[in-house]
Amino acid sequence: MAVFTPVSLDDVSQWITQFPLGKPLAIKGIASGIENSNFFLTTESGEYVLTIFENLSFEQLPFYLNLMRHLAERGVAVPAPIANAQGELVTPLHGKPASVVTKLAGASQLDPRPVHCAEVGAMLAKMHLAGGDYPLHQPNLRGLEWWNWATPQVLPFMAEAEADLLRAEMHFQQAFAGSDTYKQLRQGPVHADLFRNNVMFDGDKLTGFFDFYFAGCDTWLFDVAVTVNDWCIDLDTGVLDTARTRAMLDAYHAVRPFTAAEQEAWQAMLRAGALRFWLSRLYDFHQPREAEMLTPHDPTHFERILRERIAVAAPALY
Ligand SMILES: Nc1ncnc2c1ncn2[C@@H]1O[C@H](COP(=O)(O)OP(=O)(O)OP(=O)(O)O)[C@@H](O)[C@H]1O
Ligand SMILES: N[C@@H](CCO)C(=O)O
Image (cartoon, rainbow, N blue to C red):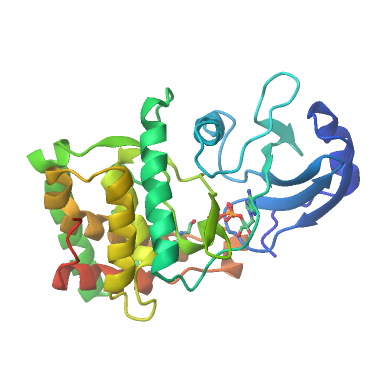
């Protein structure tokens, strides 16, 4: 189980008194997830998720938690962080930053159909619009600057053909990021990790996006690319499924119409979305932390997706 910091009901009973949640009744560690220690927490007032942040600092967390609150207040389906009596959303537990958020109903939809992709596309567009007036700024910490840093860390471990692909794609993405088309792309807070396992559904109805801890300010199109690259593919081959891709893009476009610059940038951005996760998986694979060993993510999955996006044009945005 990927709980790095264990928490008992006893541990939490004093800590929880700062929140307007009543007495804690039960706490249960959540096995999935590789970044943080997560627990389902039942109190007299309902069901919540307690997260202890293993890698993010007290300084970094307000960006994510205030963003979730900002979005929740504007009708975007996301967990709402609970503030303590001082109005704080992050407080120490066992010396690490911790937060409590509302628990979303339902379960992940790991075998999505077009109806699910349409729900995700529409909510993603709504989220981008709602984040437009979010006052805090933090760059995407897994953006181009991080790719430039991580590439030399992983290259020594790679076979020649893969290393050549990585170097060539980095070259391509650096040029893309400097292009006039790129500069015209709409930007704002993005989720940046909206995979199947970060969305809840109750039947075919979306109940929420969660796991905002890779969120940052970046192009909205990057968020769309990351999401399409996970939700709309055949997981074995990385090939895009036209019906799911169309459903997601059309639903997004109906809420927040794509621009001409976004249309022009789309193919390159799908490659950027694949490169980002290929690189982070390579990095985590070669430089693992202890509990991550329990659930390693396969880097070759995103290498395959990247090669596929380079070779085959994806459906147009609109
Ligand atoms: N607000 C929530 N409501 C319901 N379930 C939640 C919520 N937050 C987290 N979970 C559950 O906890 C599990 C782990 O959470 P999460 O994916 O955020 O872990 P993580 O370690 O931060 O992330 P990851 O490994 O995906 O980067 C999820 O799969 C989900 O089942
Ligand atoms: N979604 C990421 C894991 C971090 O949340 C991946 O699949 O590599």
